[in-house]
Image (cartoon, rainbow, N blue to C red; front, side, top):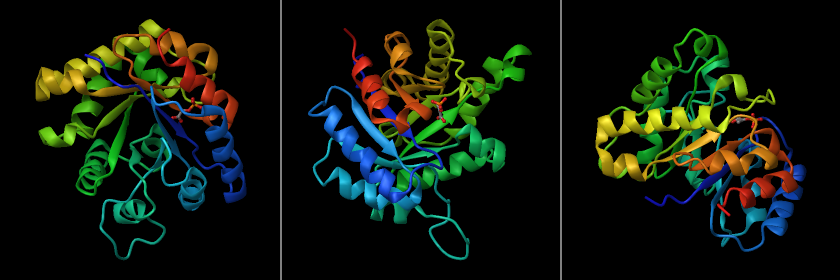
Length: 255
Ligand code: PEP
């Protein structure tokens, strides 16, 4: 099964509007016409409009957000709805990132609720799962990742699955410079695909794109992305620099 790779940049809480314009224009310039891989950038909420304007209406680079609130609107001070993201031309939304699970106590049930809202609103969720170092060292990686996958992805319809991306992000590899080895990452990606196959059947599991995230850099991208079940990358730190982000995108294509 050929799955088009998807490389997404998670800018986290970085970049003002001025910096956003500079970075987006540099990414476009260095990327040129390149449609072998799907590319997504996820700036902070405050920079989405600037990013959209800098991308232009016919850009090959899609826009994503880093979170949403599950309610349609109302008295939720400081929050952002799915409709607001669609209004700013977002196509993707990262959900259940480990930083949100850790600092904002997001549970699998909440991530699942947000994902269903995203799907109903025509936003494609990038659902993050991954174990901590303590969980891996205690031999609980498979239990944790399977439970997060099942809990965060419960109740999706067949059509929904066409629009879902899962990102495997071992917490111990995020922003630490420690990357899972290609073999370690492949083992977990295969486990996630097997879990999805048990829930939905082979055709959907075979089509599902599963990204790896955790200190992906230009020099490790090729080997990671050559693994059979790794269909892209969710890139944090290296997505803040046009040269390294575009190098990862170009290195993700099998040679
Ligand atoms: C992330 O935050 O999703 C991430 C993978 O970060 P980094 O690439 O910096 O490890």
